[in-house]
Length: 83
Image 1: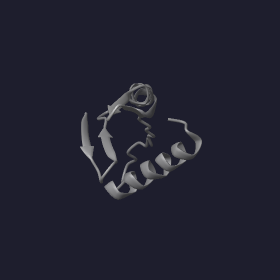
Image 2 (image 1 turned 90 degrees about the vertical axis):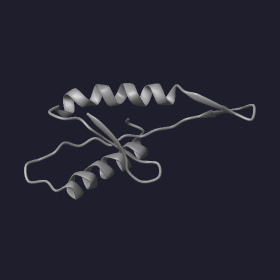
Image 3 (image 1 turned 180 degrees about the horizontal axis):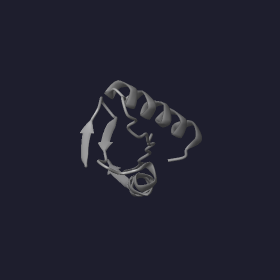
Image 4 (image 1 turned 60 degrees about the vertical axis):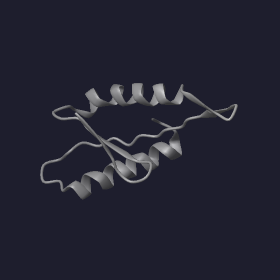
């Protein structure tokens, strides 16, 4: 498994040889952990928010197609606050 920074505030996690069913609980744990974290800055507590979009490689996919699906899933998660 690998984690990459993709843009300013976006990250890509690649889970090798795992299904969406296997990955979803892992992502939910990561999201929960981050959302339960607060940062203290100049005596103020800052709540962290996170959204995640999940997709799976399909035979013949280009990297761009995978990222586009993940981005669409991320947009949906932000709207619905799913993950």
